[in-house]
Image (cartoon, rainbow, N blue to C red; front, side, top):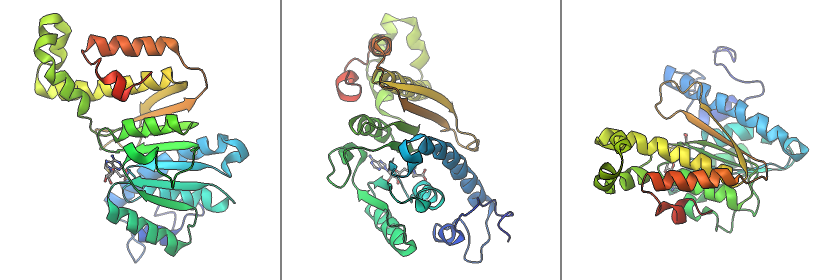
Length: 275
Ligand SMILES: C[S@@+](CC[C@H](N)C(=O)[O-])C[C@H]1O[C@@H](n2cnc3c(N)ncnc32)[C@H](O)[C@@H]1O
């Protein structure tokens, strides 16, 4: 197949896509892989613009990808952006040791020498010695459950300029809503919104992302929430972009506390949203 039939971007390595099993050994692509590639390209274009906003147009950009999995995003970002630069580094943070090892071997084979893979949980990454004090961009693409919250805490600690988050399923807030349900139902008719188990889960997920946005605003980030185009087959296609402005919003902190109180979630302030 020709490059334009494969929808490859200029300069993109076919060898990498074969190694990632997006292309077959013969250079063909199936429907699933085509969809995956389209999704990653979409996210790549989005992140590339952010990298170009960094000092030196991203020449020395550092990016940490939480819940990296097979590191499709990291490898494609390196191939299309960082490979051409003289500095910068991509860090993949992943709890599954075999994926970390496989990615490290692939990076070595391809000569992508400014990629590092760290076998650590997102929660412990802030303290990891193999990660630098500053990270420009934090990404977390479908990082499971609270790994997105850990990625946010990491971004705050590392003074990230941008955080690009596509949250996954979330259970923590739904569990708290469930626990306090009887009390909430006696207190407010709004508790009808999460009386039935499926609604508890859905509202929990929605509320989690709302709280995350308020938290990052309170910490000096401007927030944009959009749909991740190309992910139309996924229910989890909410894209949250946080851009550091250095202007913490007191009103967002107040709102965050008020929303936590309204839903009986005050106990989460200290663990998840320390102001
Ligand atoms: C659904 S996959 C997404 C992989 C990749 N980001 C992508 O979109 O193709 C989630 C990945 O996050 C990893 N993971 C789950 N919890 C984690 C945590 N607390 N810290 C780091 N990685 C985590 C899982 O092992 C898995 O590889």
